[in-house]
Length: 465
Image (cartoon, rainbow, N blue to C red):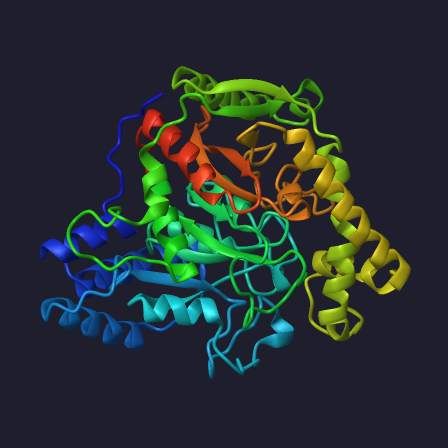
């Protein structure tokens, strides 16, 4: 399963090692990012706003602190991006909406404060589907970023965290924040061939993030490796360990899981009914990933969900649209507002839901959560493709179809989930594996992902990187 190409050198982990050893510096790291942005973003269109003057000041400060022996942690001096629904006080945060081009953030989101306090260097804000309501990554008025895996055809980047996925996949930055309400971290990670972690509902604060569905919204890491997902996750939770030597895993709980392998773990796999929704190339890659995990000693068994994935996908409809309309109905209901036509169509049904509809949807969700967790039994995780298809061309996308067939269930059921690349199709497009874990089982998902990633080996870089 191993392909021949070097791993990217600018990851969170590699930068932390290089900064500690004096082999690189935060200023060097940032300037490499800026050079990549200047070369690639005119083609890819991932960025909504860049803060390069401030970033250079922050990088210089981080470099001086490291030289003086002041070590905060592995994120110190690491460039990162925020999805443009995350508030920074005094900055414009558009939420991907032309109708909100001049919206000034009243506060700074807690997750942004944590990343900055950990020594991260904020490069800028990345593009998003309008108000995060869409899985393909398209944006009619603010621009659709280009998937970096096809230099000839403008393909879907995945959404709603489209710019974050493209910026990381093309190596313009090592890491970025996305938000996930039905797959919006995992979908761009899948279609762009990188790693995305959907964290357990309620685990990370959402204050200062423009809401879509306050019940289901979860911010999370978009990165290039499973190790980076663990590092970024710890920073976001406020648990990142100080750097005392070149092995920050020592005593850092979460990282102990990364090297434990999968021997003896019990993993659920799709039954024939769920497999039938996938493109043949996706199934081929999925089976390749399952074979690799079985070779590593995992015990695989077919899992039939008590509620089919398409029903769970639809069950989120009332919750998401009702809450989205409660937050943004003044825009969705205004025919004069400059809104993405596909987003308006998705959102308007929220206007018609009654209080009874909304309460019943919440009660059904609680019941379905209990039934699903009971059905998992002794399984340690459930494995699915992240998306049933590879990235399609943007031209001709049917916006009534969603790539979130397998991902929405994670939000509906309150689970955590890791998306990571399996490999490339013969046409050179990424395929992806989703590892769905129980609530608060991020360490298990990362453990399985780390073992698979090691067995898979390094992947080529995108043509546009």
